[in-house]
Amino acid sequence: MTRSYTIRTYGCQMNVHDSERMAGLLEAAGYERSGSEDADVVVFNTCAVRENADNRLYGNLGHLRPVKAERPGMQIAVGGCLAQKDRDAIVRKAPWVDVVFGTHNVHALPVLLERARHNQAAQVEIAESLEVFPSTLPARRESAYAGWVSVSVGCNNTCTFCIVPSLRGKERDRRPGDVLAEVQALAADGVLEVTLLGQNVNSYGVEFGDRGAFAKLLRACGDVDGLERVRFTSPHPRDFTSDVIAAMAETPNVCPQLHMPLQSGSDDVLRRMRRSYRSERFLGILDEVRASLPDAAISTDIIVGFPGETEEDFRATLDVVEKARFAQAFTFQYSPRPGTPAATLPDQVPKAVVQERYERLVALQEEISWQQNRALEGRVVEVLVSTGEGRKDGATRRMSGRARDGRLVHFAPGDLPIRPGDVVEVAVGYGAPHHLVADGPVRSHRRTRAGDVHESGTRPGGAATGLGLPGFGAPPAPPAAATPACGAHA
Image (cartoon, rainbow, N blue to C red; front, side, top):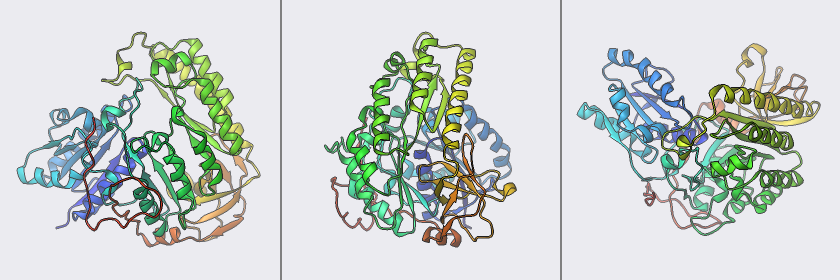
């Protein structure tokens, strides 16, 4: 009898990308996708960046304990960053878990599940370095119209607050030809939008000696037939160069959107964070981006309450936020992560102080976001229609999608047969702090191959691509049966 699976994903886009690969592996092994807790296999793809990640995982595992007790054949697997960090501690705390695997050995999931069934014992396998590049694995894509494409894994930065480098390892870059092969395969399947992923996309190419590789990659994506939108995340201000800005401005399908983490507006805090730029440099990059892309929507990440942050430091952050005029900011209260240098720093800021500062920052950014969105009222925007982004769409009879600059747009489809994956033009009637509303008539509606694919219920598979020497231009044909191992790194 065919066994079913479900995957619960937490954390960043890289985890979403990894979950698509896990799904592809399981389906290649004969499993069928299920959206419910009745699945024979439940996989948790975890995040370890925030303090509550542990509590969330063990709470969910506790919820499944009685379910599994009633269904002896059920299996539970835990992967991702928290698995890489906690390792066999997971099965000590939750002995009903069957499989624990890390960020470096996603490919091992089906084998570990089978081994756990055969041995009737938990299997914990945590690789210390990348064994198989995730992008060489089969994928079960979630979307018919948008796809994640990894350009690198790992990170070479040493930010004192961040646990990612110790869990994802040193940066490893894919060859440009392999990235382009995957982008071309997605576009051939009808995908209209790709997002290039990396912990630090601006350092892409350093491993193979080409510091201009990312700008070249953006321009190369501009030549992919059928590809209408290209996004990327996340760049690092230290490595952000003018050639990338020029590529963004001169490549029509690269979207006028930039997400660049600030973390703090205080130079003293940035120094303690080991963020190798200062606020003046950060604002200078934004000025250069806006000179080339006046309508670019710029978003950021900000941490409030880093150890030693004074009121003066926090006011410096507010000052940079005022000057930067972000379209959106993802704001976080600092939480110490065991194993990071910041966790042992003196002068941890009291929780009440962090909360009060956090609320002031959110209020300021909400006002800025609202001003920016209201300035778009009356403007006609192009929207790639999505599914599941508007929680109230059923009640309001709206559909949702993303404008080219990444803003979320809720619109009224009227009687038009609009599908996720189609492209519409609508006039913005109202700008809210976190979205735009367009309740007037749809100005234009273009049915797309992506809409056809979504309507059919199929999804792009994401053909496996190999690894090899870096190079641009027409990619070579991928090997017939390839999951080559990536070299080890610390």
